[in-house]
Image (cartoon, rainbow, N blue to C red; front, top):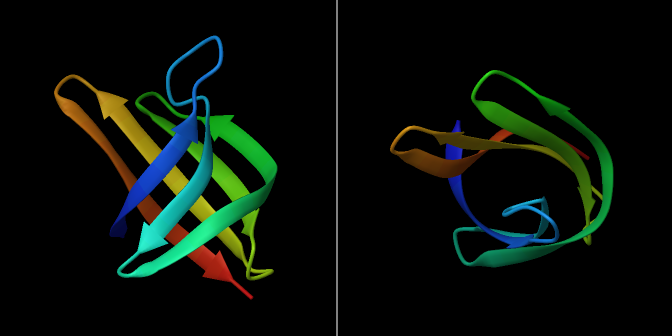
Length: 75
């Protein structure tokens, strides 16, 4: 699990979907949200970034916690 800096689109609710994220100094643009699902305290996104790879991002928003993590990566 690697923590990320994520910029999101906020429509009718906050942090509706990721639009870009950064791993270290490298920034990635989200080209497509392929899937989205919910857990008790998390929202998960499977996205395709501008490098053509797929990433699974998790947004934890519960109590005093609010952070994003990279859960999986596939070329």
